[in-house]
Length: 197
Image (cartoon, rainbow, N blue to C red; front, side, top):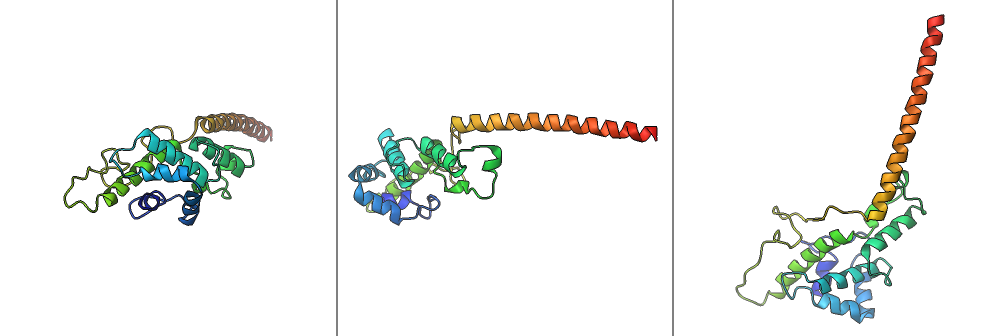
């Protein structure tokens, strides 16, 4: 229960928008695999690969994609679905799409798991009178000021999405260049006709 509380959001760990506490609890009650993954949280100060993989699978299931093991794939598929298959700059900047309801990228999830693990470890050590707590910014998902470190990697978006956005941006720039040239030509035609008057 401690790990579930930390992982789904508490005072020191962010939550997943629109997920809440009941959905993850019901999912855990149905799945011993996810229970085993979260049981390991807080056993050590550091996050091992097994814990990260287990939490990633659990997060995929939270977003309704229990057969997927890649949160980046789930993020991409959900974004594609929200955009009705049209992942473009226009569709992403539409006010009707709430991008905050997408799952985090894997890089961001790694930091979330680190913060959750750190908080759970502190709670699990509550029965020990004196123990040393590492600084949260020493690989535990936080910056020195205590703020969350959302992503330690450069890649926040999946490469597929970056490719689509770069293609659309290039097409948009080319379209703007053509429109600008046409406007310049129209302006020069107007200037020359007014000179004849």
